[in-house]
Image (tube, rainbow, N blue to C red):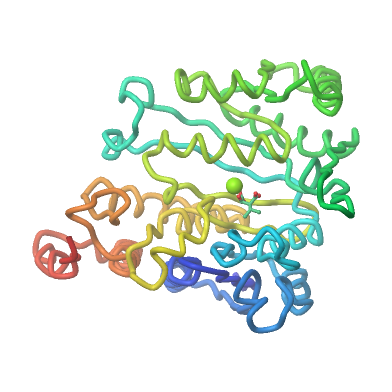
Length: 371
Ligand code: IPM
Ligand code: MG
């Protein structure tokens, strides 16, 4: 199959983790005889530096013409620490989500037995945790009216949702639950917010269309606690934009590292795939960032292109790597491997060249000596 992929490396560690995913997609293309055509585009701080615009029009145009988009990370401290900045890197990502109508952000949370010890949570609580967060991505407080009074003493962020916005993502979440353990949890704040009461009403009304799915409702403050004390209870979590942003970072501690979690943002047209981590500027250019979140996002991209076997092979390679102790510094601060080494190992695995005992020595040589 021939597919067009727009690649947006973005800021910080974005370029180096995305580079590994591209190597892996190339290894997949070679092994399965596909052809991936990449167009590199700008977004974020790097786009502001080069063009003054966090999301140049060419980037939107390329995305609209692509089968899928692979994105790295966004953000730079020089904007984070300047609340008066007129233009911010994140505006690029938000505008892209809106322009492409990427209304559903899908964030799976899985655990790897070799990494259980890394989680601050007890192994018995996180063993076999497997849930997925469906986060609404183009509405709510992120996209409501924003105002700052002239004297700068009052600010406003409005939160709005329409029935249609709630229904379209809820259908996806219900359908996902049908394919999984048939359990959906709506996370809201219906005891306080009008928008949350609308979410509940809409989801309650939809239950009849999905009689095989059990639906639970949790207030977000309670959900934040339940994710830590009993994450096994969840199958599909459905929630609005802001709550989804917060609980998905929280849920990443279950896996052991934020660097491991992938995501897919889907909507009406092309879909975008990105690790959930940020641009981690302190690590940029050091070859120490964890590429797994990006590589697993590439696996979600392959799934989206209906390349199921290909996606499964990438996941298998990632599992093999992690369970053999080939991990980055965020996971093992002493015995760690470089970002690029992990990429090479996964490519070797995909090409059928699984590094065996004979090659172990070579791999050891590629181990970091920075302690
Ligand atoms: C995410 C990020 C973004 C968000 C930022 C970078 C705008 O935190 O994708 O979770 O808040 O949606
Ligand atoms: Mg976030």
